[in-house]
Every structure is written in C-alpha cells, then in structure tokens.
Image 1 (cartoon, rainbow, N blue to C red):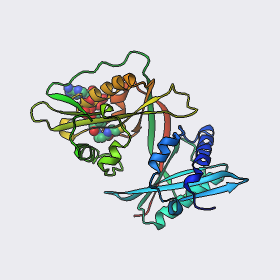
Image 2: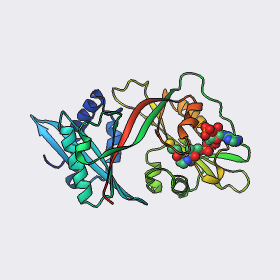
Image 3: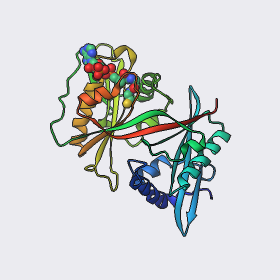
Image 4: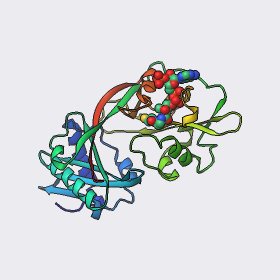
Amino acid sequence: MRPGREADLSGLIELMRDEVTAGRQDIVPSESLLQRVLARFDWETKSRVIEESGRIAGSALVMSRPSPDGVIATVYAAGHGDRYRDMARWGVQFARAAGATIVQTTVAKGRGDGLAETGMTVVRPWWRMDRSLSDGLPETTTVPGYRLLDGTSVPPGRWSEMFNRTFVDHWRFKPRAEGEILAGKLPELSLMAVTSAGGSPAAMTLAELETYPGDSRPQPVGLVSSVGTVPEHRRRGLAGWLVAESLHRLRRAGARHASLYVDGLSPMRAYDVYGKLGFAVMFEAEVWEASFL
Ligand SMILES: CC(C)(COP(=O)(O)OP(=O)(O)OC[C@H]1O[C@@H](n2cnc3c(N)ncnc32)[C@H](O)[C@@H]1OP(=O)(O)O)[C@@H](O)C(=O)NCCC(=O)NCCS
C-alpha cells in the first residue's frame, strides 16, 4: 500500500468503473469533475492505493469537513475482492486518527460486504431519483408573493448564506463556502426565489450538466442539488417551482435526463416533492457510519 498521487487518476477511474460493474456504486465521475474536486487534495496524507501488476487494485481517499456534529470524514473506497474492505478499513482508521468524530461511506443497498468489520454500521438510506427530460416536463407554477432570480443577478455571498440557513436542519449538515457551492455551475442554472416585497431569500435550487462515461442514462445528465427552502417559507410550493424551472432550463442547456440525490429518511419528505415532479428512485444506496464521540 502506498500514498496515491494525482498521476493515479486514470487508474482510479478504471477502478471506479469496476465498482459500478460490481454493483457497489452507481456512477463513474468524469475525469474533469474529479480533477476539480481533487484540485487541492492532499494525496500523500489522505489517500492510499494498492498496486498490482502495474494496475491499481484498491484505493481509499478520505475527505473531511467540520460540522455541528464534529468533524465528518467521508471515505471513498474501491477495490477488487477483499481489498474493498481493507481500503475502507484504512480510511476509517486514518480518519479516526486525524480527529474525525464521524466517518461515513456510501455504498449500494446490501453491498457493503465487509464494512461491518471496519466498525461501521448502516445508518441511513440514500437514494438517487431520476426522470427523463424527453417527455412532458412538469409546468413551472409561480408561487404568488415571490419572484425568481438566478446566478446572473444574485449578489455574491447570498448563496452560502441561504445554503447554510436552509440546510442547518438537514441530517449531517456541513456548512459550505460560496465558492464551493457554486463551483463549476452555470449562473442560469443557479436559482433563488426571493419575496416580491422585500427581496428576502426564500428558496434555492442548483443544477449542472454532467457527463458520466459508460452510464445507461442518456447523456448529458442534469444534476439537481441543494434544493432548500428556509423554514418560514416552506410548504408553499417553492421547492416544487424551482425544481420544475431547473428541469426546463436543464433541457434548454442540452441535458437529456435529470438526477438528484435525496436522504431516504428526509423528515420533510423531500422525495415526495420530487416524486410529484416525475422523479422515481432508480438507485438505492446506504450510508454507513462509525462514530468516535
Ligand atoms: C424539502 C424542502 C426543500 C421542501 O421545500 P418546500 O418549499 O417546503 O417544498 P414545497 O412547498 O414545494 O412542497 C412541500 C410540501 O408542501 C406542499 N405544498 C405545496 N404548496 C402548498 C401550499 N400552497 N399549501 C400547503 N402545502 C403546499 C407540497 O404538496 C408538499 O407536500 P408533501 O410534503 O406532502 O409532498 C424543505 O423542507 C427544505 O428545505 N428542507 C431542508 C433541506 C432539505 O432537506 N432539502 C432537500 C435535499 S434533497
């Protein structure tokens, strides 16, 4: 086992493809997405790979961030056979030694073979919901008393303020900075509803175009994320409006399919909002966690 390095990226992508074939993961991220996410990643400290016959046969990358629940570390493990468990175990042990209070990994439902041996248990269902963009899209129903802005007119700093207010009651909430929330997103696909009267931010929804190599969905896929309404404006149709508007804008931008990820135990039943817009659960995963409080 050795630390990973940036030059391993194509070998890691190959391994991720094997994870999809093995049924543990649903997607292989594009190289450009990985390059963006891993731009300042500390490979030497936070990753390990196993090399066999010149190929990468196992890998673990650990990313962590502070949260109100303490430092939450996410382990991205991959590997052939038992190496998957071994790499996940390295990730858990490293994250714990580095001060994480919670260590997580996400894997397809029922496919976390060996993860129990790393000290993790299943804590949450996590779903990917999809819908086609080729058939009739839901109508965008404007909510009276609100108007729609997008990234071309929202002042800087507003997105992080909104995100952090809206998601504070979301499970395992982690505060995010403006740059991180907007990274790589087109301004016209970044939507915010504000009150017509005072212009107070009320709801947001972000979307982006992604291409997943070797995926069965028609490409590119419109990925909808950060769907949130601040508590005092909920249950008025704002999330439904913004997600429906995103679908229209994604289709105009060239997307052929739409996907989003949702907490399967969402206390606000976010999945029902998406279900009403034609989304259906297409991939069921589980979040595994070890807690070191
Ligand atoms: C989940 C969330 C985004 C929903 O936002 P919202 O703006 O309240 O959503 P909507 O108003 O469009 O729909 C919510 C419910 O209100 C209902 N509703 C819509 N218009 C309504 C109206 N005028 N009067 C009463 N109810 C209404 C909807 O039918 C829906 O009902 P359901 O829960 O039975 O399906 C919001 O609760 C939230 O931000 N939660 C925290 C963050 C989060 O979990 N985000 C999801 C990440 S995947």
